[in-house]
Image (cartoon, rainbow over all chains, first blue to last red; front, side, top):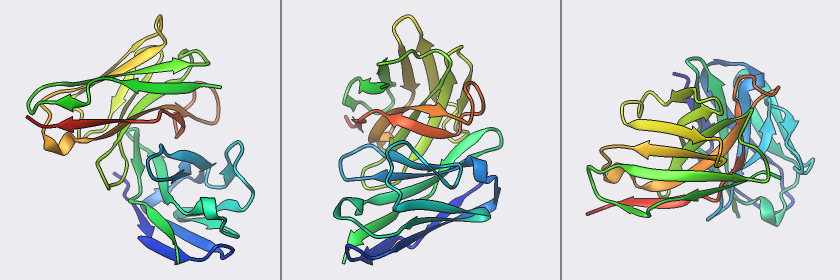
Length: 109
Length: 123
């Protein structure tokens, strides 16, 4: 089973700053099978990025995804107040199984 | 647009069976994969399993022995049963559609999600 490790656990930044979130896989993951979600308190997760770099419908272009193999990155170019949330990566693997990373919390500094 | 809504008891006794239903509105349940995901309070997300509209299923190996997911296309609903629950099964349970690069292809990412329902296991 592929394990996804997200870092850092918490990212403390100010509005307007750039956020870089990491998702590392224990084995190589096809970039086609990697997604990112945003979850705000009391809400369900929302799809942000699929296929490692494609933005979901309605997602602002300040969100971008990149990476391949075992290392993937979600970047928020300039943090808006509504971007402070928890972010999860997720992969589709063999068997098939779907697994999530442990999450990164982006908090206001 | 497709919307999902979970329903079911919010309190289940230990050793009993947790039962939830997800109702899909704004679109047909046909031609897609549908899934259950859970999130213990203050923790991360765990995929439970999915079902294709035709009835084929796939479960998380860690839960496989206790999980059954079924679909009722006539009602546009799918359901979750989790048997022999313990306090460790206390969580917010979400239903979601899983989609991939093409209709009917490998189910890869979850979109959209239901709002979630908290199920507490306690006597």
